[in-house]
Image 1: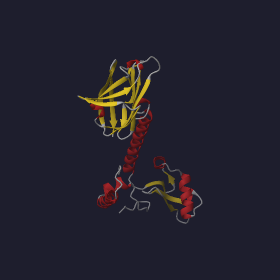
Image 2: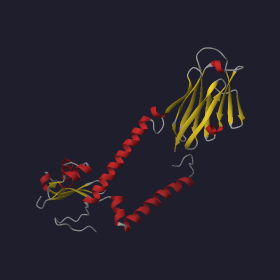
Image 3: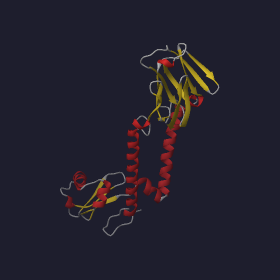
Image 4: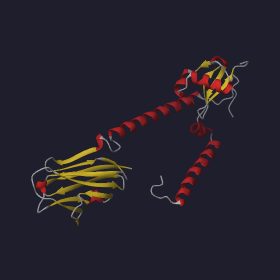
Length: 169
Length: 102
């Protein structure tokens, strides 16, 4: 029960406690502002700072999100020079570390074959070796778990691409 | 919170969890004054003996016009100088104590 004060008001007021609450409230606002700014910049996924590129322009390049959220839609976007095709096909090999915790939604265009190898999975796409504008291959997926994901994607005739992602919970 | 599990069992567990948390918190608040202060907050006097407390007003984002509005609607008062005390209660409402004779 609150004490009756000199001015006759029975109220439990404690300015020291209120000042402490106000300080904590301001810290909370600052944290929220920082998180919001981080979100807008892409530090929580889906923004300019989350986008990453790998590879050699004119041969094989990859655009992906280095910061991503678990269970959120994501993609690996490859740009492939048709000159990398051999015998009418283009082979893209993913380290299994990249695919272990991934739920693949779709691959555009669909691969002709998928082959399992020691530690990797190979996707084989129909592609004619020719000069001209590059081909696009998209892997659309959701990360099933969170944490650090790192692995290589390789293709004949191109330098290995290193994918380094952090998946937020 | 429920992901793709839309079962009645999961809904029941979810509701029981929320209701249970509410009961536990109310018991803690009832037995601990410190917990009650942090979970519920304390009232803050913004007007004491007719004097405006700028620190309290600024920190609770309440200005005299809001106190006058509360005094008008709750006590039928016309002016701020008819208010003796005004406090921001734990639930955010403004309570008014009129001056004697107002």
